[in-house]
Figure 1 (cartoon, each protein chain N blue to C red):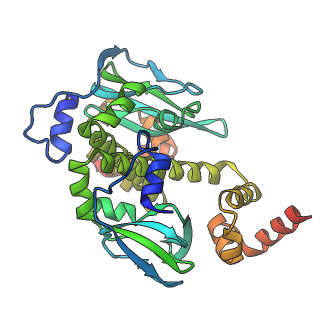
Figure 2 (tube, chains in turn purple, yellow):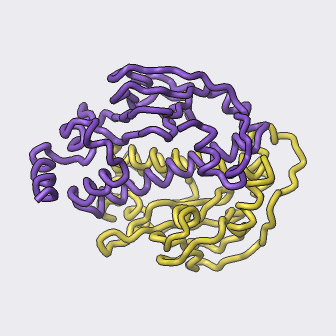
Figure 3 (cartoon, each protein chain N blue to C red):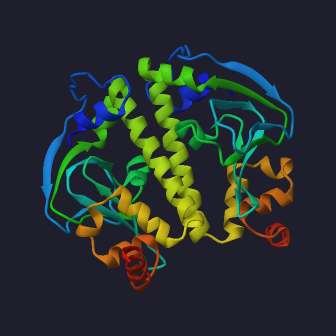
Length: 188
Length: 188
């Protein structure tokens, strides 16, 4: 999927438009297990995943937690660091070979001030990040791990083929043994 | 503070501009302890607090928690409900008499598609909500209650005069007795 497809699918009024992107993009390939943004780095780019899978981790009390997976057709970034220009407290790592469209922060800021398409795109992506953050927080408080696992697989069917069970357990905040029991029960 | 002031102070390129708002606003006064948006209601407005103080609460396991205070010069709404058009799981209540500028959801959506000022304003407010959500989550995990209390008072000096200690304890997620000990220690 390309950024132009993403815009046509998600931003009202652009569904049937010829789209000229109001910022420069650079196409970059990352190998599997590569760090795109590291802990402590100041984020100065936004990424669109044309193909592949990435994970976002955070360190809490010296333990690494997986907070998000992003798949093809989604924007990602160390977004808090991008906005605040403080060092990132998350790390972005590729889980497969990835083809990515990269937008520089300054190019994006310039586009926001001139282009209604750019600012509507930024608004849409930020709203989506906000909603998914709230939903995840709510899910953790209200849904048991087996329900969250089923929903993750529904949202991301290819994930279980590409990501180790250890990583999925880490994302769900449970022990790998518990996830194994959940999977056996769901398969039975 | 007015929305025009807010735009001049926060949105780049508008600092010295004459601003014509790209959407209709309605000025409304709410008395103290009035419900602006209730649990279960579908949010169809965004509010700017010209004067006053509001609180946002959420129900978790039949217990009501205070998740946010908004003061003069800030936008608020049941934002998740506004975006998803699902019933609100938060409640917005005035803590003082409030003067509010009200924007209808549909007027805002229309403005986003036509006005670069509107979409930049929406983008800025959404980024701010996103950052404050992340910051609050991080603070809860990493900072003790006394530090969070001191930071709340610094951000919102008038809050302790206007809001009962019970409410502030509820916001901090501690018992009123613990807050009382923290205050005595800080005053000594």
